Amino acid sequence: MTAKRRFHEKLSWLLDNSIPLPGGYRIGLDGFIGLIPGLGDFFSGLLASLIVIKANQLGVPRSVLLRMIINVLIDTGVGSLPVIGDLFDFVWKANQKNSELLAHYEQAPQQTARRSLLENMLFILAVVIVLALVVMLAGWLIGLLWSRIQGY
Image: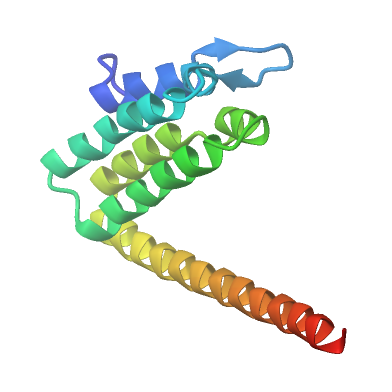
């Protein structure tokens, strides 16, 4: 890293790694912002989006941008869950992931774009599988409930 850190590096450090804890682990302001009821995760997601916007301005391909957006959506979505989401915010570090994606893209654009495309396809496949399982479980529960109602 150069002596002059770039915007995305500064922001990701502030949000994900600026506060040292005993034992060498670091957390950032992202988790604390997420503790604000109602709006914390929204504001945290807005700040995380600044790195994605910067990557777009630098001409990063859509496959890498989509990977970055997925990181932000996971951070914001899971982070909005009470208690578990707040702890998740301190661990997931979407901003650090996105800053590293941008740095990797600058070093090896083709490999980063291909890897991001593969990761995006795997993520979409996982979401489809989870949704299919949820639909199957809901169908099974409805069928079980219906058979109980019919039996009485």
